Each structure stands twice: as structure tokens, then as C-alpha cells.
Amino acid sequence: MRQFPDAGAGDGPRFHVTSLAAGLVCSLALVACQAAPGAIGPDPTVPEPVATTTSTSLTTTTTIPVPDTRVDLPLVQPVYEVAANEVARDAKQAAVEVVHRLTNYDEDADHARRLLVLGDRETVLGDSVEALTRPGSWSRGEVIYPQLGGLTDDRASVMVVTRQTIGKGGVVERSVVRTIDVRLVRGDGGWQFDHLASTGGAFQSLEELALAHAVANDPRIEMPDSARLDIMAGLGSPGLLEVMSQLADITPYGVTVLATGHPHNVFETDRQSHHTVGRAVDIHRIGDNLVIDDHEEGSGTMLAMIWMLAHPDVVQVGGPWDFDGKGSSRSFTNTVHLDHVHLAVRN
Image 1: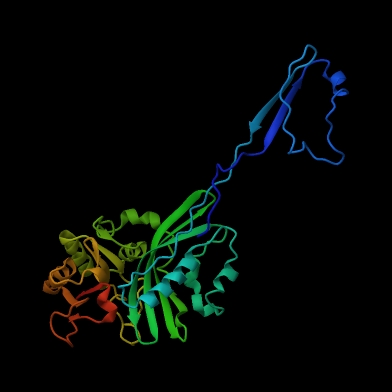
Image 2: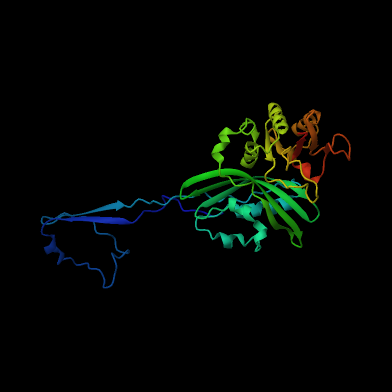
């Protein structure tokens, strides 16, 4: 963790103001202690003379501290530690470390050199990395949750929900929550960064969030700003928004992604995802519990999934349980869906 000095640490430089009474010039010739040849200022090993008063002269020494104008920047937070019980923990941790590097830098950062740590091919990061990089500004990234977007034996998609705060000096310019789709490949040494599929879009109109649909501003639904912008841009179907609002009447929950930031196709297939057409949402928290921690019978996550399957507009529910039999496309479970609930609607 990088530490920044405290603004008030130490005394600033000191100025000495000396007022001399008439006749002092004459007395200077009698001063026995003189600076050594070539010395700059007083010898630090010799105590400063105490102010004295005589019948012919008066010497007064006053110390004026100079204000310290340095400003503390926010500290870079430790790398998010993926819990031991998480599915595909090593892949998630690798993706988290990539996001940590991408979203933490200082104002004088050499971005071209910094990003070469991740890959030397232009296609590795793509144009989407511009949304994360602000030359001349500092950035601090805080991972909220890494969710699997897809997983095979040798490839993975991890959608990392991240809060990124950007500023200059001691002033915060903006703070946004985005979903970053990190693609990984399995090498001899474990999971390695392959490319950046999405950074959740560019956030140039955050002020317009005040005009968003009621779902985007519902305090019971925690979601990335990229998901709110999807709703504002009409990328979430009316049917999906209606079901999301009704689910919030039952329980608060945390959204990972709607459309922006999710793989375009079902991972490693040529089938278009429900997310791409705005008819699906991924939920990583039900009530106060992460889905990955809520696998007990009768848990809030189980009850929420049962409610979803009973809804006439819901066509697909994926999560820790398969309620209507293996092979059915309406209810399903697999390794990828142990850490979230996938909800898709008819239209």
C-alpha cells in the first residue's frame, strides 16, 4: 500500500525577524562567536543564543512557521481478497488484480508504460480502457464484487463490479461504479490476463441519472452506474424493469450487470445472450447475503428464485438450484451460476 505523508507532519521552514536597538552596530565588533569560514547559517550543534537585554542594546528573536500547503491524496486500498469459498477463486483473484492495476494510479503516471504490464498488443485492452484512464488525474479503484461471466477449463470471463474515484490534487472530480469484463486464459502458471472485453462504457452524462426511470433510482436496488445508464438508454426491456421493481418490493438486492459489461454471446458459444437484448439481469446479493454465501435450504436466495419461477413473465432463472429438472432451459444451475442469480424475461 502506498503511503502519503501527513499534511501537518513536521515544522515548515522558519523565518527569523530580528530588531536591533540603536548602538547595536557598535557592539557587533565585540561578538566573540563568529561563523566558521564557508559555513551557511548557524551551526546546528550550537544552541541558539538566548535573547538578552542590556543598557545599550535589545535583541529579540521571533519564530514564524511557514504553513504546509501539501494535500493528502486518498490511499490506494489493499487488493480485494476473494473469499476461500468462492467458485473459481483463482480466476476471480487474477481478474481482481488486473482491475486493481487498471484503476489505481497517480497524476504523474506514465499510462503507456503502466498498461504494458498487462500486455503489449493494442487489442489486449482496446479503446474501452480510455474510460478508466484519465491523464493528469489520479484514480483510486475499489472492487465491490467479482462475478463469473463464463467459465471453461481454459478460459474465463469475470465481471468485476468496481467503484472508481478520479480527481486532481485534493479534489474529487467524479466517482462511478462500473462493471469491468476481464477475460482470462489458463496457462502453465495459472490464470493469466488475456484481454479486456468491456469497462462498462464511458460515463460522460452521470448528471442525467436524476432523470432515470424509477428502477434506476430505487434505493432498494444496488447497481453499477453502467446498469443505470443501460436503463436510461432504453437497453432494459419494460418487462425486465417491471419484474425488477416487483422483486424490490419483496427484498432488496444487488445487481452486477444488465447489458453493458456482459459477454455479447453466452460464453464460448455463438448464441446471443438475453443480456445483449436487454431482457436479463444478474443479481449477486439477495437481502443482506451474497448468493455464494446463501445456499441453505429455505434461504432468501432460494425463496427469491422460487418467486421468479412463479412469475408469468420470467422465462429463465439460473442460480444455485435447478427447480424443474436437469436439461430444462427455464431453471438451471452450473458452476458459473453458484455466485449469482440470472433472471431473464419474455420481453
